[in-house]
Every structure is written in structure tokens, then in C-alpha cells.
Amino acid sequence: MSIIAEALAPCSKCGEKTKITVYKSINTAENPELKGKIRDGSLFIWECPHCHQSNLARYETLYHDPDRKTMIWLMPSGDLSETQMQAIANHTKAMGGYRLRRVRDVGELMEKVLIFDEGLDDLAVEMCKYVTKMEMSAKMPGIAGSVFHFHRTEEKDGMKTLVFIYPTDNRMMSINVGFNVYEDSSGIIGRNPDIIPDESFMKIDQEWLLSIMK
Image (tube, rainbow, N blue to C red; front, side):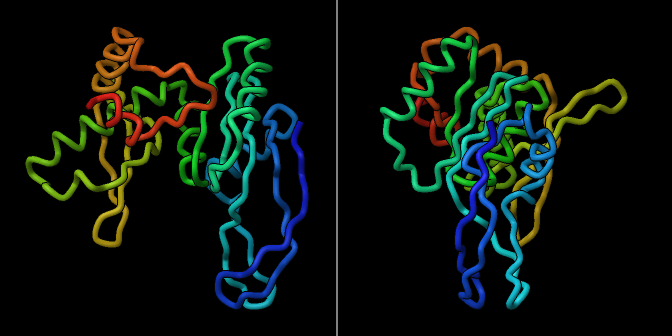
């Protein structure tokens, strides 16, 4: 079930503390309206009543989508014990076929939800990012250091693409990547199951991908 609480949060501009709503856990089956607010990030934005500054709420929460058998643990501090994670992992194993992920910030949580709502594999998506940046780096050497985020899929004239966004020169750019790149990445992962670590609440990102490619 969704667990809702209150907390005092300091404003990033004036420093005044305000009582805000925080979600210790989110169950999209019980509260489907919360999924849209996670997808666009609005669930974690609050306005200071004193100076009207918009602030980002940073707190730990467990996102649970029973329909997609997915749990994503947002852990900004990263200090949750292995015992706690394993206890929940064991519980989900009893329910069968759950996908467990761990993320560090709201942006990563948003991206995972977008990926899984599109029915995609986040491992393959991370490989797509890597391949795309390597191909682009021949013409744009600085692109290798950019952070790509999955945004959505598009289909035009019968051609399906993945849309990635990334910041450059103080603006957000986008690039469409053919779905065949995703399918090739998915095939590589399928042929090499040993690269997937057997652990609870896996942290799947570019850092993880680079670690298995060494």
C-alpha cells in the first residue's frame, strides 16, 4: 500500500522550513494518479509559501507497480542495509517474476518508470545509450561525457525509434535512435545472461554497463 507522511523541509532560497507531504511507499494499483506525477516529476516539487521558490523534495521511497511486477527503490543516501533489501526481495520472489531496481535520484526514478511503462528492458536501453554515444563521438568528441536519458518512443512512417534527451550548452537536446539498435542490444544481453548480476534491487545505469564491459 502507499504510505504517506509529513516532514519539515528547508527552502533552497530563503531557508524557511515548510511541512510537506512525503511518500514513503507508492503503490500504483491503489493510487494510479501518482504514476503521472512521478513520470513528470511533479510529485517531488513543492513551493515555499514564504518566497514562492520551487524546491525539489529529496527523500527515500519505494515505488511499486503490481501490474508490471516492478519495484524501484529511490535511495538518495544509499544507506539502506542489504538485510532490508534482501527481505523485500525474498517477499517478491514468493509473488513471482518481480523486477527490482535501485536509483539515486528523482530523475533516475522518472526514467525507469518511463522505460518500463513502454515495455522496454532497461539493460538494453543502457546499452543503446552507450552505442549511440560512441557513434556520435566521432563527430562530437565531447558527447561521451553527456548524460543521456530515455524520454519516449516514437513511430513515424512505420519506423519506431527511441528518443533520448541530453543537456548541452545550457539547453536540452534530443536524438532519435532506431529501434533496431535496441533490438540488437537486447539480443546481446539475451546471449550473455551471465552479465546480469544476481542481486536484489539492482542498480542499472551507465556505471553498471561500463563495469561489465571492462
